[in-house]
Image (cartoon, rainbow, N blue to C red; front, side, top):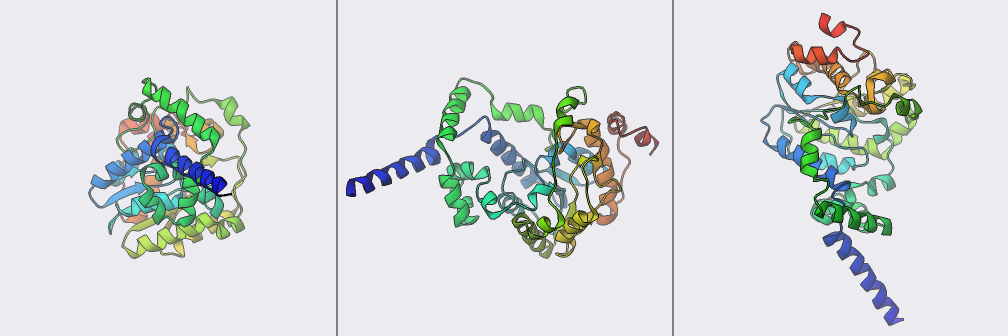
Length: 338
């Protein structure tokens, strides 16, 4: 019996040492880790007041800090990375960089609101936090720490070995890939309409959570806590709707539930006339990712919507921005006319 216990403890220790000190996935999870680190590093040196856009990949794909920041005359960092990274992690990191007068715009994906406690504990960032930042993982709670420590499987280990070997052979260096995919404000670039896949987009189908799920979601509780805390510190927090296909139903009750998460905690809410919904032809490779011309078109609308909430004068987008936005199928000449 004693030998069995010793073997079990030794196996656990070996597992924790392997995933806590040695094994990692530089070409998949590592890309997200480097992307977040780069955005945080830029955000840390921006002078206040600054604007930070936070969501999953909807933030960098469908929103352009370059456009919004220039139109509002404010420093901007697009801090979104991917759905699946825990909101508690994302908010904890960015809260340390926010000051009174700063602005946070949150066009969070609908599925972020009804995340369950179990789903949050198993967020994909747990693996890299356990390996690279166990102190932060511990601050996120015992449940998050345990899940991060024991959330890896044998397939994860095999994938890590394959990625580490490929990386050592000179394949897929994260920094070089990120430099090609993101601009200096953290926006996703290079997502042209010519390289979009309409046939794939036509296959996508998603059902958003209903109002009740949003009101009761664990993700909502995390968001509400962030809004309440940051507003109390003098940060301006503005909620918004994520981009999505205009073929997906968006009931008024759902919008009201999302709005309430912000306005009942002292935040503001931006609701565009089109509810941030666009035809599938405007998207790149998912319901959350506008192609870059349409990213610019949407960002112009967001900047104009944020201006009165922030009591700022909005500037005309540059000719280059208007030209690119005018290539979005939804533009139909309205950009050049304004």
